[in-house]
Image (tube, rainbow, N blue to C red):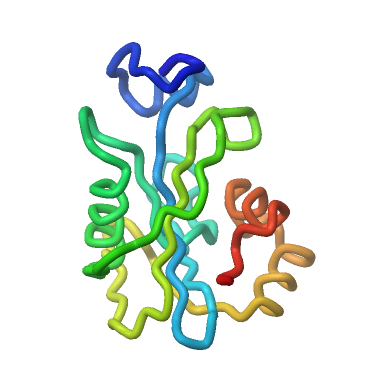
Length: 160
């Protein structure tokens, strides 16, 4: 995509990341009624950051796919979760800190549905309190994706 968010080409994900090209992604943060955030541990065979803890669900957009539809797809494919109305809360510009992804962040609040991680995508998941997440960031940063750390540092991993 160009600097005005217009698509320029369709390329494989690994090529886009390797060449640091601007592109779009969606990330979904799932919170339970106690305002704990669900984090997934990426499958050990993932190409990027295998085995690290990450946001609840994430994906790149398909050709012609709307961000809302991509958010629903990510929840279904990774967590087998059918959320009614994830809310778009923020869009981050494509920059080095986001891996040159324009990131649309959606939130699912007060989730009470069971989450069943897709074993092909996610090795495990857990709801973390704000204090537990802070401890992970401060003491075990190497176990987390850089994206998760970036969002925490920006104050985006808390439910209002």
